[in-house]
Length: 162
Image (cartoon, rainbow, N blue to C red; front, top):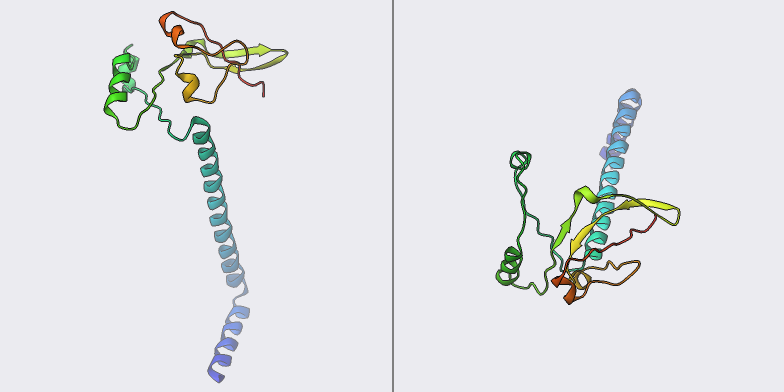
Protein backbone atom coordinates (compact mmCIF):
# COMPACT_ATOMS: atom_id res chain seq x y z
CA UNK A 1 0.00 0.00 0.00
CA UNK A 2 2.85 2.35 0.78
CA UNK A 3 4.31 1.71 -2.69
CA UNK A 4 1.03 2.84 -4.28
CA UNK A 5 0.92 6.03 -2.20
CA UNK A 6 4.58 6.70 -2.97
CA UNK A 7 3.91 6.22 -6.69
CA UNK A 8 0.93 8.59 -6.64
CA UNK A 9 2.94 11.20 -4.73
CA UNK A 10 5.75 10.97 -7.29
CA UNK A 11 3.28 11.29 -10.18
CA UNK A 12 1.63 14.40 -8.75
CA UNK A 13 5.03 15.93 -8.01
CA UNK A 14 6.09 15.35 -11.65
CA UNK A 15 2.81 16.80 -12.96
CA UNK A 16 3.10 19.93 -10.80
CA UNK A 17 6.78 20.36 -11.71
CA UNK A 18 6.01 20.21 -15.48
CA UNK A 19 2.76 22.17 -15.71
CA UNK A 20 3.11 23.22 -19.38
CA UNK A 21 3.91 19.68 -20.49
CA UNK A 22 0.90 18.38 -18.53
CA UNK A 23 -1.45 20.98 -20.02
CA UNK A 24 -0.20 20.30 -23.57
CA UNK A 25 -0.54 16.54 -23.10
CA UNK A 26 -4.09 16.95 -21.79
CA UNK A 27 -4.91 19.29 -24.69
CA UNK A 28 -3.52 16.76 -27.19
CA UNK A 29 -5.66 13.99 -25.73
CA UNK A 30 -8.79 16.18 -25.84
CA UNK A 31 -8.16 17.25 -29.47
CA UNK A 32 -7.46 13.65 -30.49
CA UNK A 33 -10.68 12.36 -28.95
CA UNK A 34 -12.69 15.21 -30.51
CA UNK A 35 -11.15 14.46 -33.93
CA UNK A 36 -12.09 10.80 -33.71
CA UNK A 37 -15.65 11.70 -32.68
CA UNK A 38 -15.93 14.19 -35.59
CA UNK A 39 -14.67 11.68 -38.17
CA UNK A 40 -17.00 8.95 -36.90
CA UNK A 41 -19.95 11.38 -36.98
CA UNK A 42 -19.15 12.44 -40.55
CA UNK A 43 -18.84 8.84 -41.71
CA UNK A 44 -22.15 7.90 -40.07
CA UNK A 45 -23.86 10.88 -41.71
CA UNK A 46 -22.41 9.93 -45.09
CA UNK A 47 -23.56 6.35 -44.59
CA UNK A 48 -27.12 7.47 -43.76
CA UNK A 49 -27.25 9.80 -46.80
CA UNK A 50 -25.92 7.09 -49.11
CA UNK A 51 -28.41 4.55 -47.75
CA UNK A 52 -31.26 7.02 -48.30
CA UNK A 53 -30.17 7.48 -51.92
CA UNK A 54 -30.11 3.73 -52.49
CA UNK A 55 -33.52 3.33 -50.84
CA UNK A 56 -34.92 5.92 -53.23
CA UNK A 57 -33.61 3.95 -56.20
CA UNK A 58 -35.01 0.66 -54.94
CA UNK A 59 -33.33 -2.15 -53.10
CA UNK A 60 -32.36 -4.01 -56.24
CA UNK A 61 -31.43 -1.26 -58.69
CA UNK A 62 -28.09 -1.15 -60.45
CA UNK A 63 -26.98 1.63 -62.77
CA UNK A 64 -24.84 0.46 -65.69
CA UNK A 65 -23.02 3.03 -67.79
CA UNK A 66 -20.53 2.70 -70.61
CA UNK A 67 -17.03 4.08 -70.22
CA UNK A 68 -14.32 5.44 -72.47
CA UNK A 69 -11.12 7.21 -71.56
CA UNK A 70 -11.04 10.99 -71.57
CA UNK A 71 -8.70 11.03 -74.58
CA UNK A 72 -11.12 8.91 -76.61
CA UNK A 73 -14.01 11.22 -75.67
CA UNK A 74 -11.96 14.29 -76.61
CA UNK A 75 -11.47 12.77 -80.04
CA UNK A 76 -15.24 12.96 -80.54
CA UNK A 77 -16.17 9.35 -79.82
CA UNK A 78 -18.71 8.74 -77.09
CA UNK A 79 -19.57 5.41 -75.47
CA UNK A 80 -23.04 4.01 -75.81
CA UNK A 81 -24.97 0.97 -74.68
CA UNK A 82 -27.12 -0.48 -77.46
CA UNK A 83 -30.48 -2.23 -77.03
CA UNK A 84 -28.66 -5.49 -77.80
CA UNK A 85 -26.31 -4.78 -74.88
CA UNK A 86 -29.32 -4.29 -72.56
CA UNK A 87 -30.85 -7.59 -73.68
CA UNK A 88 -27.51 -9.36 -73.21
CA UNK A 89 -27.18 -7.96 -69.69
CA UNK A 90 -30.74 -9.00 -68.82
CA UNK A 91 -30.24 -12.55 -70.12
CA UNK A 92 -26.66 -13.14 -68.95
CA UNK A 93 -26.79 -11.67 -65.43
CA UNK A 94 -28.85 -13.82 -63.05
CA UNK A 95 -31.55 -12.14 -60.96
CA UNK A 96 -32.44 -9.26 -63.28
CA UNK A 97 -36.20 -9.04 -63.68
CA UNK A 98 -36.49 -5.66 -65.45
CA UNK A 99 -34.15 -3.35 -67.28
CA UNK A 100 -34.70 0.30 -68.20
CA UNK A 101 -32.62 2.32 -70.62
CA UNK A 102 -32.24 6.02 -69.80
CA UNK A 103 -30.67 8.50 -72.19
CA UNK A 104 -29.49 11.64 -70.41
CA UNK A 105 -29.55 14.63 -72.73
CA UNK A 106 -26.71 16.68 -71.24
CA UNK A 107 -27.05 19.50 -73.72
CA UNK A 108 -30.78 19.91 -72.95
CA UNK A 109 -30.43 20.34 -69.19
CA UNK A 110 -31.06 23.75 -67.74
CA UNK A 111 -33.05 26.03 -65.53
CA UNK A 112 -36.84 25.90 -65.77
CA UNK A 113 -39.49 28.07 -64.18
CA UNK A 114 -42.91 26.95 -63.00
CA UNK A 115 -45.41 29.10 -61.09
CA UNK A 116 -42.76 31.63 -60.14
CA UNK A 117 -40.33 28.98 -58.84
CA UNK A 118 -37.17 28.11 -60.75
CA UNK A 119 -35.04 25.00 -60.53
CA UNK A 120 -32.60 22.92 -62.53
CA UNK A 121 -34.25 20.29 -64.75
CA UNK A 122 -32.82 17.11 -66.20
CA UNK A 123 -34.19 15.95 -69.53
CA UNK A 124 -33.94 12.23 -70.18
CA UNK A 125 -35.34 9.74 -72.63
CA UNK A 126 -36.60 6.38 -71.38
CA UNK A 127 -39.14 3.60 -71.94
CA UNK A 128 -42.35 2.57 -70.19
CA UNK A 129 -40.44 0.24 -67.83
CA UNK A 130 -39.01 3.33 -66.09
CA UNK A 131 -42.27 3.68 -64.11
CA UNK A 132 -41.90 0.16 -62.72
CA UNK A 133 -38.25 0.56 -61.78
CA UNK A 134 -38.20 3.97 -60.09
CA UNK A 135 -40.23 6.10 -57.71
CA UNK A 136 -40.45 9.11 -60.05
CA UNK A 137 -43.83 10.13 -61.43
CA UNK A 138 -44.73 12.98 -63.76
CA UNK A 139 -46.30 16.07 -62.24
CA UNK A 140 -48.64 16.48 -65.20
CA UNK A 141 -49.87 14.07 -67.86
CA UNK A 142 -49.31 10.34 -67.76
CA UNK A 143 -46.48 7.92 -67.61
CA UNK A 144 -45.30 6.07 -70.69
CA UNK A 145 -47.08 2.88 -71.79
CA UNK A 146 -45.74 -0.12 -73.76
CA UNK A 147 -47.28 1.25 -76.96
CA UNK A 148 -45.20 4.43 -76.51
CA UNK A 149 -42.04 2.43 -77.19
CA UNK A 150 -43.17 2.09 -80.78
CA UNK A 151 -43.18 5.83 -81.51
CA UNK A 152 -40.96 8.77 -80.54
CA UNK A 153 -42.35 10.51 -77.45
CA UNK A 154 -41.35 13.63 -75.55
CA UNK A 155 -41.58 13.23 -71.79
CA UNK A 156 -41.29 15.99 -69.22
CA UNK A 157 -40.71 15.57 -65.51
CA UNK A 158 -40.85 18.65 -63.35
CA UNK A 159 -38.40 18.71 -60.48
CA UNK A 160 -39.79 19.93 -57.15
CA UNK A 161 -39.25 23.70 -56.82
CA UNK A 162 -37.16 23.42 -53.66
